[in-house]
Amino acid sequence: MNQFNFKTPLLGLQMLFVAFGALVLVPLLTGLDTNVALFTAGVGTLVFQLVTKRQVPIFLASSFAFIAPISFGVANWGIAATMSGLIAAGLLYVLLSFVVAWRGNQAISRILPPVVVAPVIMVIGLNLAPVGVNMALGKTGDGAMQLVDITHALIISLSALCTTIAISLLAKGMLKLVPILGGLLVGYMVALTLGYVDFAPVIAASWFAIPHFVAPQFHWEAILFILPVAIAPAVEHVGDIMAISNVTGKDFLNKPGLKRTLLGDGLATTSAALFGGPPNTTYSEVTGAVALTKAFNPVIMTWTAVFAIALSFVGKSGAILSTVPVPVMGGIMVLLFGTIAVIGMKTLVNAQVDLGNSKNMTIVAVTLVFGLGGMHFDFGVFQLKGIALAAISAIALNLLLPSPKHSVEESAQ
Image (cartoon, rainbow, N blue to C red; front, top):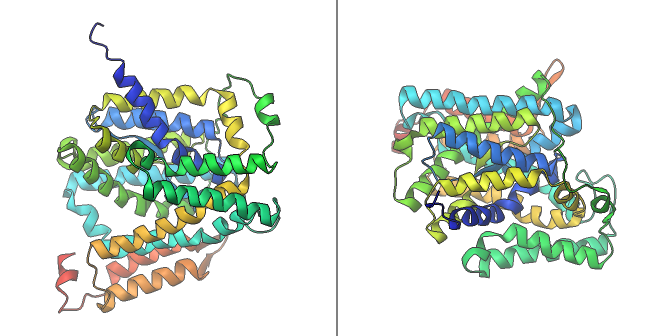
């Protein structure tokens, strides 16, 4: 008892502050409940720590990669049905963890090489570009309705966008790790000044409230639509674990092992969907904060999870977030979705993928056009298109197309 260090929970609260903007942005964009997202981020992190024996100082929260499929699923099938697809995505991680346990850490790179993953990541970002622009212009995501005067919308969205860019480029220390939160706050204040913030929901909300949990409902079409999207974040998980390993000087790919971290991430995502929350992923913002503060103790992330769960039961916190005007989110989305696409390009560059190689060029070209051009295949009542089609196409082409004999890179893959 006398060994309790009050610095540990304070560091945990600081980590939640770093993750907060990105954590709540996903439910704000997809129509999910922000308090549920806070709760499932906390629960997911604790599940991850249980599986990995609390060895990795990392926090899990809302994944950006699933924004498009969640938005589509909620609009077409409802939250409950969409959750069944997210459960399946989590179980795919679990399956991949079994593959790693069986075939070793290199199994992931053999099944999902950069030439497959990179164009899928690009499709995820660019598919969302029209939604971000519409919201930045004060419209609904599909552009069907003007919600905010276009001139005012541009002032609000550009203030959020410019603030986010300025913080990410110019800020130092901990402030540099919260560009999304900074953009949200500045955009919100500008919108408040222009009269586009209504505090009625905040006044009506109680201080204590149970989050609006939603039980999943089996829907095979949602499962088939969302499942392929899990490919990109599964590979991203490997990169995140390598990053935190480099920061701490410990090889987490070997201990507790990629099989355990993937299993923990998968069970965290599945557990989140059981309550109606977005999929969980390892947060690079928090990894950056760990590097900056040298706070390598995994117990800190336990406190971060506890604070996230506690905040999820504060009714007014969710009500405040629900008052964020559309252009504020639109301004941040312009940068965010573009960044996702750039990460895809960076994946190709870092892996030194030879696009002069006919097989690689074909995979990337077909994946991009199928994913962005509106290509679709109809199978009765089920239609395969967009991100799901891009992911399946990339995997199939990589497996089926022969590698040119002279290609050293392809044989190495």
